[in-house]
Image (tube, rainbow, N blue to C red; front, side):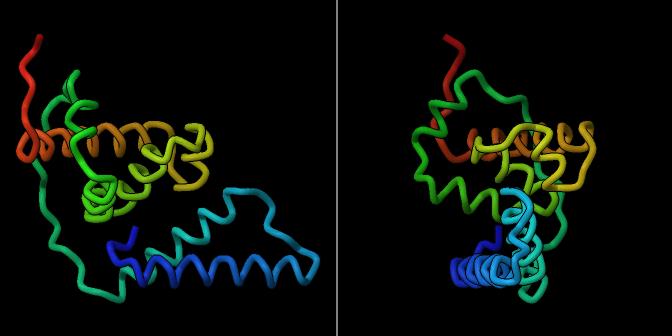
Length: 143
């Protein structure tokens, strides 16, 4: 989310500390989404403190049937770096999507977006990611 491991660790530790304080007061976080909402908010706040990338329109192309083969060639770190460079809320939507831990309803609640907005964020991000994959990994012709 932050593109910076130290900032991410700082956000994570602050979230855990806040959860512990709440639990100590007998008011533990309501659900598992609380942790993600809190950490996301902290990451966004920390990200605003650093240098922000210029807004740019990224090229998009249709998601290839061979995207999985292309992604398999990447280190997990490359995927994380690419996602961390996306603007928010697209960055958060893609991170939640690729974590594959949330239902669509949970993602909408986490990101505070409507169904159509979530769909647009994920679809656009995946098309942009496919364009980047095509430029950086071997392109597979239809078989």
